[in-house]
Image 1 (cartoon, helix red, strand yellow):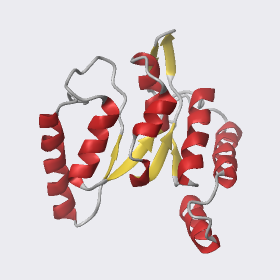
Image 2: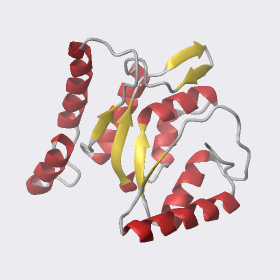
Image 3: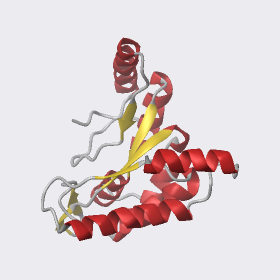
Length: 181
C-alpha cells in the first residue's frame, strides 16, 4: 500500500528497510509502486523515492509500467519523472501492461501486452542505464506463448541497442550476462 509522501514516512520506511537489510545481510531493491488516490504530503513522488533509497542505502527496482500508470492517473510527465529518479541505484526493471479504464485512469493489472508508452520509457531507461535485468510481468490473460516471446525479444533488442554503461567491453559483457542470465 502506498503511503503519504512526507519526511516522517521517509524516516519510517528507511528505518524498516535498514532493519531488514541488516537482518538478511543483503541490500534490498524497493519498487516504485502504482497508486490511485492522491496521497498528500510535503514531497513529490520522485523526491520521496530518492530520499528513502538514500537514507536506507538500498537499491531501486524500477517498474516502468508503474511510471506510465501513475503519470496518466496523476497527470505528470513520465520522462521527467524517470529523470528525477536515482537511476544509478537501479538493479532490476519490471515491465508490464495495464488496463485502460478511462481516458485518465489506468490500472496496473499485468494482464495486457506492454503498451507503446512503456516501451518508449523502457528504451529511455536503457539509454541511461545500459541493459539492466528486466522481468516481463504477466499475471493473467496469457496470450499464446509466441506473443510473450515477441515481447521478450523486444526487450532483448532494446537492451542490445542500449549503450554500454561505461563503454568498457569487459563491463559491457558482464552487464549483458547479468541481463540474459
